[in-house]
Length: 543
Image (cartoon, rainbow, N blue to C red):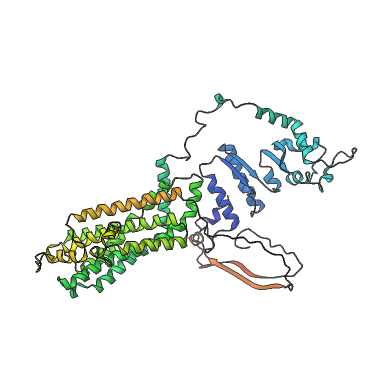
């Protein structure tokens, strides 16, 4: 496909410069070739490609047809002679009718039998298109002894049906298919070319590659949690906090702030998931892989980053703030924060699969964020909720994280001082916050967070399965009036135009040490009104 020169280069979109239009077309062609389809119908694949690239692409298609036994039908507009020679059969259509359908080697003899001959230096493809045209047909008339009359498409169609090729084609189509000659596996009952396990492995490999390419983003997010853990630890520094009812609210606030950091840290995954949806929908609709094979790696391969971020946050802030100095309670807090981070990432991915666009995703993600935050048990304690709304407390994953973290800290022995009301200080603090639960509720919270993670990922897979691609741009067409605007012809001139791009990584590997690669060198020219100018050159960014 001639794509070796743009390997490891972003495809690009409306906001980012990437490969050229011709390279995008070749990329799409190659993408469909490696898919499960063994039958390809390709329409005007040469548009935007130069003749050399078109020849390369069709040569690849020829090898697929001959070696891999693909069934390929390609429509081309006046291909170059060398490209035309690559095809085995020709279907010539005009005015909605098939003028010829048969081997390429017989098409010229058919038209010669009709009285038309291709000149020696005329391309076969050009001849086949022009011989059907009223204004060009006469120049190919070869029977000089007979008077020329325009031969219509209907007459060509009738002559083709009466020809040997037409009769052979009609005879083949009239025979019913003999199923005894068919292969037992010719009828496929699966829509994917690989087994479920192979599909999952392929999606894992692709997701791992994307994770490596985006490693900077994930490492930055983990470092961000570590930095905010340091800031949180200095704000709630242990030297200024005692084990009493006054400072208990500080401890509770620091726990909530840690959870808030995890929620905010997961928000960028919403945009990242939405950006990848168009490619997923194209692959899904062409049966490359099912939604579940895409969703499972997206979840599993994010677990290490969630673990690293949670470790960075907990290990820095835990002893700076001065939580209960017990190793078991340190790891209990780490477990809750880790599970909460996986829940948040799964929640935003699920929102992305249903919202599909950046605008809708921002609204949906913000609503999910506010719901989780508002009914999480800290901003509005459970005891302050009206009775008819108390059930919402149990729907927010933040509630279970609050229960687990608060119980882990305030049910520790150092908070066991008996208060005037006859309960321990830690229990009194939990009662004031509406989080007064037994110690075993920690494991219920762990189970609930795991359940939320599975629920959101199942919802993510369902959303990818049932939702169809929604274009990000809506076009409204209105009838336009006709008018002629006066204008003054202008001459455009330019002098010493230079253009630079960042040096590709592969060129640096081969010893090119310059930071910029110059593509245009002192280009000078002018465009005059009334003069049709052609810009010639290699396809790509130079043009």
